[in-house]
Image 1 (tube, each protein chain N blue to C red):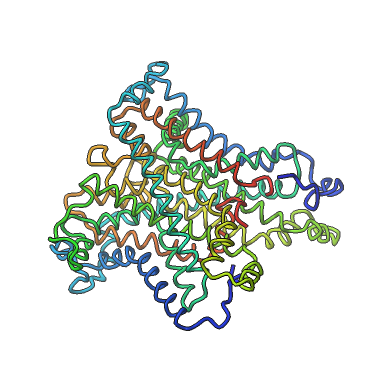
Image 2 (image 1 turned 90 degrees about the vertical axis):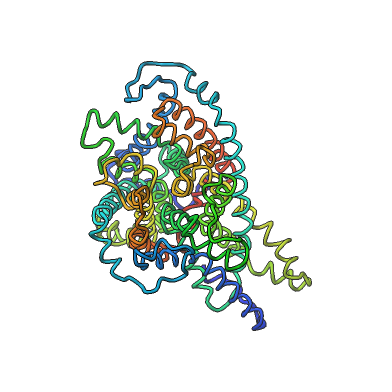
Length: 305
Length: 289
């Protein structure tokens, strides 16, 4: 955590070559973008959540906490909040567990490993909307290939089977796709963590007669802790914010029965034209994200950069 | 990454075969949806709506990839995606390069604060802020109509701002690894400051710069929520929003939808594979070595 005073600190003579305007010409434009485009909307969101805004977007002045009262009085909200909690929990936990297995596989040497790694990159690089859309098509009630496969395997009795129109079933498929798109990044982070573990620790354990699984449990897993923490928190933020998966597959429907607080916020604003209530929802969402970020800052040794 | 891979001494070939088998299954699992994309995009329109669904069409309709260009507004979507991602990337480089260089080289007052700000913005996705972003650009549009909602300018600036953090972070890391002595040696040899930057520093930081460039481009290329919110008229829709407008028609032309998707996906997958080995460090902001 401590600042190392060595190496990169240039001595004064080096400084002379720059016309000494200080850091502003160098970092000023970056600050302008951060303040103008990231922090201003944060402020604007807070302000809007306290305003009474007409459907046409005209502000009719302050309303105090009315938007928040409307939001928390919304009968759909409790269900959406519980669903969001389950959504983040299930997707992140399963993503981490599956990624641990995938990283172990990709860390082992076998012919063709490079191609498996490349395949894993595809869902990472591809647009999430497009990935979610192909899953939507594959899950189509009448024409989807999933129904055909499950029928051929004898798992469902007919070719026609509704998945995304039934809320309890749809949410499971949404989670499946959310996990599918989260696995590549998570696996790569864990893999990087595994490869930073010095080999001689394993050699020593081998000499002591530790079996493969024992070595994994007593060496790999504990040393992976930092990587796992970081991957978990980044995933929590991403999954909480995950909009395209739900939007492309169910738009949060039927009704709001597959909405999370993120898609619900969007609907409040652009379906129901209630910008004030949407802003209140996004303040709630933003607070949650902020907590995750604070957690991340505690976990990460960011000053080392 | 490749250097530290464990070398199992005389591993039995059965184990290797087993691993390869599992590897193949994993590979198939991750490629399957994109394979289905390819199959659907090559399916003749008549065969799309069959019950039960067929694994393969009776023949591959390769002309779908030609027809899509005039049957759907693909050119327009592609142009928008290129304009938004291209200029956002350019803006990020112009802004992040000097900031990263200065931050790596000098201990100025507020340096840690700047790094903290960058790290926090990296964690903020535009999704949580989209209501605020929308309101902001409505306001801006009242004063500067060429920069408000529904303009490329807004989309370019927002995409640049939210990708600035990653680029700054990864380039700070790269510049920090270049010894100051190298730059000094060059300037003692009579090179001007600009020559030092151009001939010594930038080439050495090139992997970082390329990673930042490609990553920003792909992130903007795939961005969805902001475009959905700020790009309301179809003529500035990028590909991500454009393909969703295929749906909602009475009969969705899935073959064209997925032909467009593949045209969007293939180039970025290749770019991604190029920068893969530098990505993780940047995305986890120095947390994983």
